[in-house]
Image 1 (spheres, rainbow, N blue to C red):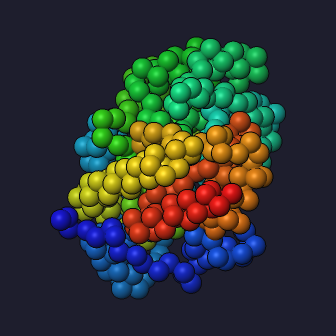
Image 2: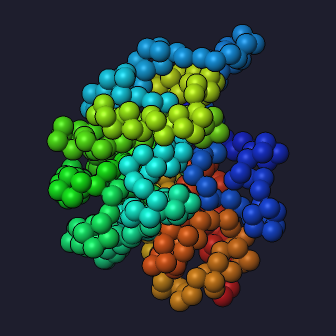
Length: 392
Ligand SMILES: Cc1ncc(COP(=O)(O)O)c(C=O)c1O
């Protein structure tokens, strides 16, 4: 028995939760069990809550810079967990990783320039490129025998054909769950250096890796890849802090960092959120055991879904994840149209998932399920899915 109880079902309704309280606004109904947006239904470790409380009790929330007391725990965490050697001056604190991607796009490309992404991928990538009046170029991941691979030839060809200026990498990859290997990342990095493509590596899911796999941070690939390179990280996924809106952008190359910072400042962003910084460094300082137990719990959830599907719904294929708490289900043996799939998920199963179509056209017959919830919630979701599919 561990120290933490991830089975506890905590009522998140009426807290302004995007996941639990926005059914009417976003789906037109409030009877759906939500396993969509990537936050967790688990409580933070007590030490972190206490640190936030203690700071809140001080009662004054003026402009704040925590200096080394903030950077220290961050650097220790990344060194210990991912073998990354980071210097404090490389870090810029921002309100979030997507915000930083937007800054990166404006810093390293001009309106009309092409930015490449690997679909199916976290849908704000496409949105934020378009909203900044840049062109989206898609390097489709190859889906073969239930597994995703990178199409390197297509990646380079698309870069050349479209004069691509920037690449947004998702590592580990949401939603397909790949934890890219050092060899794969180096091949991508070589192509980007060869064609002078700036790289934003979004590693927000880096702490969620299942047994037998290892996250390689792009920053560890070597100095020759660090020109025009930006690393996006945050404690928000690892410790369920998305609502505190704090991310850490790491840029080793000075000129690249200056270019990024100019865009950040042009947005009018100055000092970060004090409680966000307190929560972030407290979580890195006190949260390791919590995370270890959480990873075991998530592995249990993953095993539960895998067994359930193979026993009861063998036509629904689980794309075996190597990382992330988001799992990717292939319904192509069940339906041949994404509207029909959405009807089954919403009207019959009464589930709120993320439909595959939003991650890219070619994944229209997939659904993404967030398994970072108590097992009882997951069981209920799988039972509802079973009923919906067996009364077709
Ligand atoms: C790959 C990826 N990047 C970024 C984010 C969001 O990060 P932030 O809230 O810091 O903008 C998410 C959230 O799901 C994500 O999956």
